[in-house]
Amino acid sequence: MSNLDLALKDMMSIDGAIGVAVVDYNSGMALGQLGSSKTLDLQVAAAGNTEVVRAKLRTMDQLGIQEEIEDILISISSQYHIIRPVTGRKGKGLFLYLALDRNRGNLALARHRLREIEENLEI
Image (cartoon, rainbow, N blue to C red):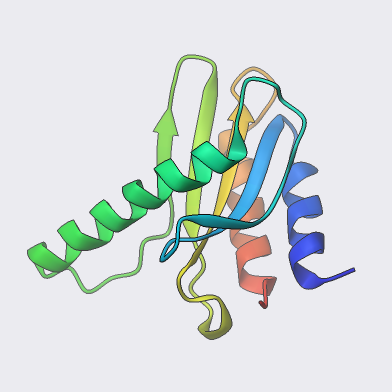
C-alpha cells in the first residue's frame, strides 16, 4: 500500500470523517480520495477548496506574511471542513482535505491527527 493510500485510510479513521482527499492545488485535482457520502462530491470539493487555498496564499503574499498556513477551517451547521497544506519538501503544492461530521467528530483531535498524517506524508 502506498504512503498516499495509508494517509487517506488514516484520515478516514478519524472519528466523524465523511470524506477525505489529498489535493494538488496547482491543478485542483485530487490525487486520492476516500468517502462514501452521497451528499459530498469530493471532486467538486477538491476543485473548490483549491480556490480557497490559492486565495489565502495570494492574500498572505500581498500582506507580506512570511509564515506557513497550518490549516484552514470552514464550519457549516452540520460539518467542519479542514484544509491542511502539506509543508514537507516532497509534498509542496498539496493539501489534505477532511470533511468532518460536527456531531460525531472532535475538531481538536481531528486537527491533531491531520498534523501527524501531514508530517508523515511523502508523495
